[in-house]
Structures are given as structure tokens and as C-alpha cells.
Image (tube, rainbow, N blue to C red; front, top):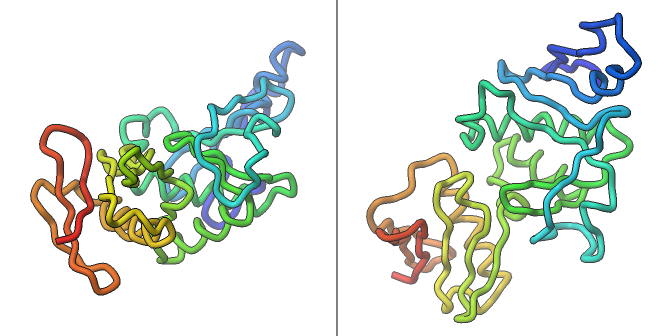
Length: 228
């Protein structure tokens, strides 16, 4: 990847060690270190190095149901070691997605993105759109970075939000019957929670003219979304 106005290659092991033994060349050429906004990230799985494997796909957004992450060769983008403790902080996540978008826009081989905290596979067009809109000041891309499942009671729960907000949300069945409306509501709630401390008390809000509230579960890591 060529350097851009916002990101540049800070370490290329091949350039750093030009006198290579044959058995080390593939290993050294399989990764790069990138810097974006002062934060360092590693790109793994490049060149002739070992192929990366992704985990199972639990949620698919903007891609066919019969496509699996194992159908493609993967490269991985990871926060550098000094960012490990804050890998789920919003500045790190935002910068990492900015880098991922740059890679997606400059690679003719980009076929989609796998977001491991939610085990979600995101189609290329959707990934470019939702991440680009968020970086431009739009809503957090929750339909992609967060998955959603329906329980036996008909209520909808998030899957993967805890990586970003330390909690999952649970919509009561009355708010989940219309799945499209439930998805819109979930997007709004996730946008409220990401980047903020989880509420420790009942938090009222209005959505599409209806009074609702968020109620934290004191015994677990859930936030209930309920009609007021």
C-alpha cells in the first residue's frame, strides 16, 4: 500500500533487512507496520507468508448467505502491541476502520471484511458505505460491526456490542415483532452507547415519537430496551 495523506508504512521488514536468507524472506514479507493519526497497526498475511484464517461467520451483511470467509484469502489488520489494552476504545476502532477503508479502496481484490468481535462478514459495497458515512460524521455502523439474534421469546439481542460498549442490548418482544423497525431502533441505541460509559440507571429517550428507556441489568452485562 502506498503512503497516503493520513497513513504511511512505518516499518517494512524486507526493507529493514535487505540481506535475507531464503527461508526468512516469506516470513519477513508477510507483514507491514502502518501508522495512522499516530496509532500503529500491523497488517498480517501479505505476500507469500502464512495465510490467515478467520473465525466462523455468525452474521452476514450485504453479502450472499452462501459466501463464507474461508472462501477467500485473508489479510488481517490489528492494533499494534502498545494499543492492545485499548483495542476496543473508540479512537482505536475508528482509526483501524479508517485504515481498513483505505485498504479496501486501494485494492482491486477486496471482497469483503470480517469483523471478529461480532463474527460478521460484510460485503464490499456495504463496508465502504457504512464506514465511510461514519467517518464523515454519520451514525456508527452497527449493522455490520454488531450482529443481532432473536430469542425464544421473540426479543432481539445484540451480539458483539460488548466489545465496544461492555454490554449487549436486549429489545423486549413488543419492540422486536417488526424486525425492520427493531433494526432501526437497535442502530439508534448502539449509536447512543458506543463511546460512552454504560448507563448505571434508567435512561429515558424518544425514538420515532415513542417514549422508551434503557434499563441496565445490575446482575449481568445486558441493557434492556423497553417501552416507558
